[in-house]
Length: 311
Image (cartoon, rainbow, N blue to C red; front, side, top):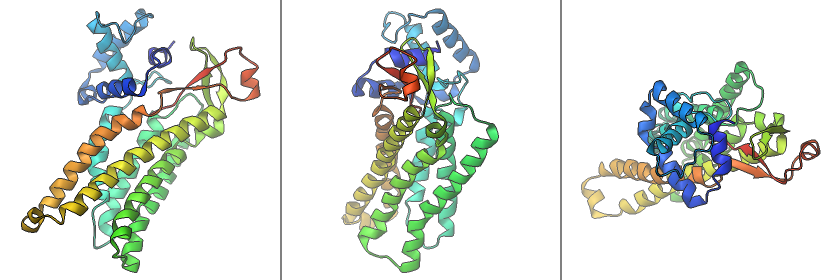
């Protein structure tokens, strides 16, 4: 069985345990691991089938799990490209979220931040989604291109409405971009991983044996991930706006207006630094399901089957 799949199936963790686990996996040092170190860690886990994350006496086992879980896709057993590993998500998206929420006087200055943000998140969703179904490279490219274009359009829509209709009300000027960012980020996950509900993803028993392909499991995996993204970006966009609103009423801002940018950027990074592991931990990495298609249920006596939810 693929070591990463074995880990997520056997380690029945609570939310707090998953949060602590993701805090380790999101360590930036995982971005600079050499292929040689990763392969050695994988070999160690493959030769120690009973190795548990709680083998506190063996530091090598703990380090091997950390390297494997943070760099290798559980479905394909292939290395995740460095820019799209989970530990790269915060450094890439935090500045983009900050730039996409800045107040602007013309729409052109918002195009690049929006395109950059949705290009990265779309690629991240496709690469880290469930990869157990059959798909051709050109299908992913065409799907990704369409999702990026539509997400960018809807991401720019609130700014267009503000400039076109001179919406100066504080509620619409500040709340509208946050609401759109939250909704579009969730829909981006659903659209970029739309093959999973339509084609079905692998479901397996507790031993890792594939029982079949389930559309219901694919739908649930995408829905859970979309929910976690809405929580992540909604919170990360809302809290800095609230802080900025009250900060503008302080004497310090009156003396140093430029400090607003520093505060907002710092607040965005801090909030996202907390919310990324929280959002990744809301749902288990390996989902469990009992109500699936009839042909799958008739193929096994297992009361509960497992599937990879993706990140």
